[in-house]
Amino acid sequence: MSTTTLTRPAGDPRVTPSRVLRMEWIKFWSLRSTIFTLAITALLTIGIGSLISGLVGSGDGGPGQNDFGDPASISLAGAMLAALATAALGVLMSTGEYASGMIRATLAAVPARLPVLWAKATVFAAVSFVLMLGTSLVAFLAGQAILSSRGFDSVTLADPGVFRAVVGAAVYLTGAGLIGLAVGALLRNTAGAITTVVGALFVLPGLVQLLPASWGDTISPYLPSNAAGSFMAVEATSPSLSAWSGLAVFAGYVAVLLAGAAVLLKRRDA
Amino acid sequence: MIEVNDLSKRYGEKLAVDSLSFAVRPGVVTGFLGPNGAGKSTTMRVIMGLDRPTSGQVRVNGRSYAQLKAPLREIGALLEAKAIHPGRPAYHHLLSLAASNGIGKGRVLDVIDMVGLSEVARKRAGGFSLGMGQRLGIASALLGDPRIVMLDEPVNGLDPEGVLWIRNLLKSLAGQGRTVFVSSHLMSEMALIAEDLIVIGRGRLLAAGPIADFIARASSRGVRVRSPQAAGLRALLLGEGVTVTNAEPGVLEVTGLDPARIGERAAAAGLVLHELSPREASLEEAFMELTRDAVEYHATTDALATAGRTNR
Image (cartoon, rainbow over all chains, first blue to last red; front, top):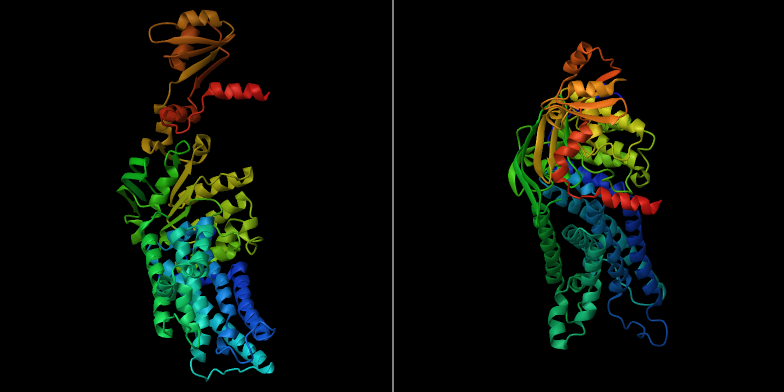
């Protein structure tokens, strides 16, 4: 040990948004669990899409040949389940810091606090959107190839609404993660946040169907996963919002939750 | 320089810090002492801008923490050991913190080397021992080469070699003119490293100042006298304001007379002395006396004695 080696660090001594982004970027890629979770998301999206494309229409009880109108949605069906993985990844980005106490080191380094939340959201959104767009493209192309090899109708990216649906799957996977990140920052507890997000995205739509039809049909399209479903489908199934209204509603959930997380991050003791 | 001004912090019903004021000056090690639950960690969290004061303010180098442009370059802190994601390598932990304050990779490698973690820096921190976690925490405190270093219970969990290393490190940091503020609930540890002391109990300031003043002021002092003619000496010394107790055969504990007067009287009477030593109250005793009423969690010695017997 020699403290005479203490050297004054070079550079402009200031915390800037781009430096906070760099901090979160380093944190994001230095956890093995991040990489595993992203890989699982891709596998689920592509695997389930291919599986359903390979099974749909087979068997006596299934719909007849060409009875299903939306081949793109069939190949992208895996995204709905894979969103569980991105949501969990988002939750862990927030709660992992609280569980370990790392959050106090982070906030001591960035006393303005909010740049940390924005940087986490930006890093997650950028990485997730790029990877998930590639994933949903692969899932789509594989699914269409399987469908057409089995003699069913298939579509291409040039067909109306198809490209939007493929991008929409990446938007949903990314948005689910951002919802997880915001809920994690709000609740600061991994188990509570994952339960909440799973409940809101996956359980609530089923529960709403138990309501009287007139209520259920009114509420249902506005639930986050159903709103996302409307921009992930080429043809909307009723009751459903239009693709763009669905996107607006879904983005609204993400924005409101992140804003709530920002208010509490600023206000609460760390 | 850290200035704490009339600071109070309330968590629900509990007043953790109560109108606390003190200043920590550069160039010396300042010990922050108090029993468990006295409010030391809370005070440190408020200094770091992590907890918001209920009232009062804290200044770090003359500014509030939130106003620091690159806080890691002004004040480095170790608030809890192993406050690091268990899945992240130590190197990346430090690299990410450094990045936020514009501190380069070279400095990260320097502090890793300085705390002796070079060989394990690429391993995931979840497998670190408590001592390695403390070293990593100290590395992160030193990242920005800050003028103020603040450590909460840094010797906890360290082996003797590590404890010695911390002592030398803190002294040399203070020797370089930095402000070094270290909390502990162990007076004996403070006695070895601190020049200044700030003692709190139940969130209130109990004493502040140089450690020597603190010892002098606290507790009674006595003189230990050993003599083969103890009985005669005892009769000779007794008088107004003087108490003499016979601790063991041939040994007297005298209060109310200084060693010089005792020695003179013994010589005048031709009595032989084998020992004449001023008995300073140990720091530990001084601390116990000061904080007796402020200890948060009392264990009665009766209860402990009973438990000890039943265990045997």
